[in-house]
Amino acid sequence: MAGHSKWANIQHRKGRQDAKRSKMFSKLSKEITVAAKMGAPDPEFNPRLRLAIQAAKAQSMPKDNIDRAIKKSTSADEANFEEIRYEGFGPAGVGVIVEALTDNRNRAASDIRAIFSKNGGNMGETGSVSFMFDLVGYIEYPAAKASEEEMLEAAIEAGAEDVQSSEESHEIYCAFDQLAEVSAALEEKFGEATSAKPFWRPQNTIDIEGDKAATLMKLIDALEDNDDVQNVYANFEISDEEMERLAS
Figure (spheres, rainbow, N blue to C red):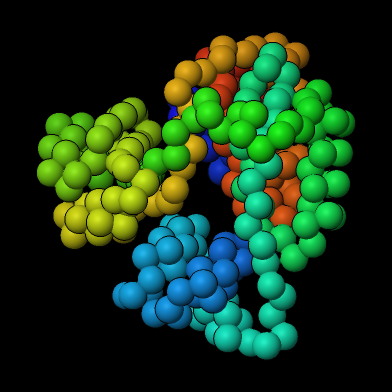
């Protein structure tokens, strides 16, 4: 989404400062376990598992952790996680999509509703926000990996639909059902991506600043800090200056 890279970069620094690495690994492990349980435990035959492992490696998750997460998928004692999408609104009418993996639907719904309420938002019905987004494939590479022209040419050849390059990164968008194929083609040329995953891309964004921007970031932080939450998407745009102010 617009503003995604800037916020992701700030979140990466903030996450390191806040020592959230353990929680991040826990969420990555959960996705790997669920992916392996729903399909084959071999990433060669399971595109979702392959992407989950790729995401874990991009965050420097140790191989032992990845292997343990895969093995958990065959354990009778492992909890059965349910995939649930929640939708709601933040300050200034910003639409928010929350993807969760939970072993307790009632707890997750109650906790996420409370987070919205305490941080200037409100949870809506399913479909109240997602119609303003498109579910696509998202692949990210560091800007240093290739020139803008090289990445654009390679992405189009691989079947991507759009490329947005900046000083920090190359963001490649493709059809959701082509994610594994496009990701594999780009990996052959540029190596493993920083990120490759399904992504809710907003059709339009809302400019936000000042107190509303600060409140929105608190809402997103609180949602991402919840153990059941895997991903948070929102259709906002914040200026570079405002982003730096919020990060300070």
